[in-house]
Image (cartoon, rainbow, N blue to C red; front, side, top):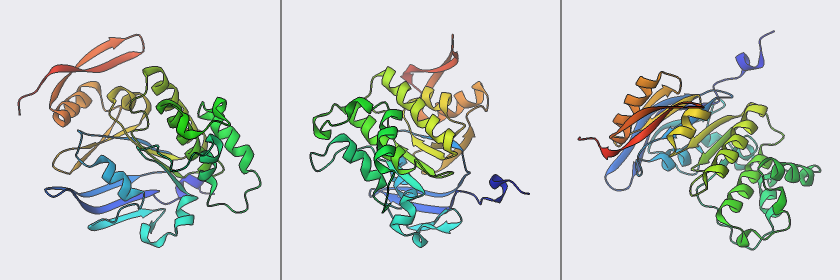
Length: 270
């Protein structure tokens, strides 16, 4: 019997995708694939369209050309509820319009399910996995930025808690967090995806987190194209690709945890 992995179509396929970023910059055309269970970090300088690409994949924006196919179907063929049961999105902004308790914010991830008899238990478990269990009963709008990030992470965990081989999209989930919390939440995100076979696509700015936790890098440049590179392509190949992407030098440094790439202080000449 063929394995489930062999029978499952490509989870996400981007074909000829094009979009405008502001008045002068274009994204694409892009042709990319994301398979079940893969972890991909989307890197690139500020303003090149990383968040725009994520919103196109999430069906929050309409492309000006090309297609995004999820589980073999164009995104336009999915209902909102159907898509919500197979993919979850963690945006940059953590704002909530009302003074909801933290567990009610997390429960929003279960809104596509009715009835949901296990919802309360899943919300509690999702908060624990996102290191947010101590925030039960707290009003979301009184939480710190780091605490809000934990609650929103628990929300997407709750959304895909009882789903296998789904898609998790996260946009700079660790921005403005201290280094310890960054590592804690990154391990929570990647561990959650790995346990359930979810594909993970994350917009990141931290090169070391990308290299340490992801199998592939999508390097989005100012010209609107993407270079698809395995994270283990070799220190020198990865270093050269990052130098070309950010136009700065990177130094290889040996640490007790293995080699690291550290950006130089000076910018490379164009």
